[in-house]
Image (cartoon, rainbow, N blue to C red; front, side):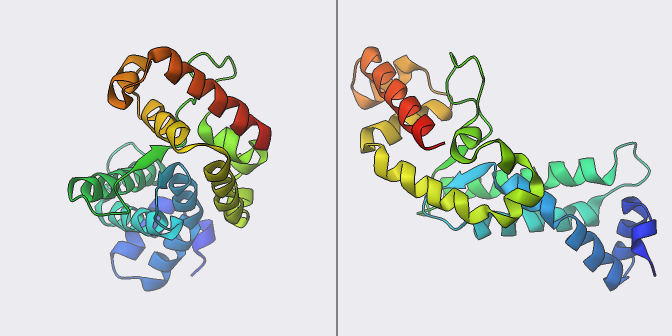
Length: 200
């Protein structure tokens, strides 16, 4: 059967009804989407494959639970399920205090509030061409290399400040948590911005 001439919704229904080839086809076709979503999250000390695996579980749940009588497309539903599964896994690991899955950073969030370009950390780390899904799949090792560079050029204090800032904490919150002045926090973030930009 030629699944390429069928809609994704039709293939999903076949796969759910026991057509193993249809199931394999839709899982294969959507693996790029899982990898794309997985790139938006960073688990300190964990392999990227762990996040991809959670995303694949989310994709399987999307196939299992998709309701073709509703207006949303399968792709939209799959994106939601994949993202939800990844975030749920991260929160679960955090609650259970299992290291190293106790910290994550969303790479989609703007790094600096006052940055007119509104660049995300992902933009700074990998560059514009990595936004292409095919490029990102092939070049996923570049992210690890860049992350290692950042670990080397940022001080431990700067890394802690950046993580807290990306998690949504204000200068004042960070200064209280780290027992430093707000000006010290601002200076650290400006140094981070310059250092990351230098390797972007």
